[in-house]
Image (cartoon, rainbow, N blue to C red):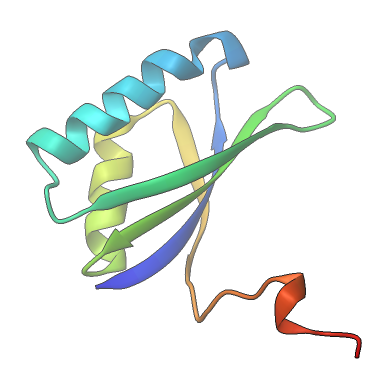
Length: 94
């Protein structure tokens, strides 16, 4: 399966994100079993908007978009296929 990074902006406050996270997980377990949600980074931008950067494993972008439509309360700003991962350890100085 392919790994994706999904960039989203939510139309709700940070205090409502726990409920949205539960709904997202419920959707993946009940209706979108082909998606694996690995983790998300949650940030609040300077305008107070909640933004997330989620790593999903899925067969394609289309299923991620269908999941997002069902979840609601946000817009998808981008879906990017992850080409690989690196850490500082991958670039030794000596």
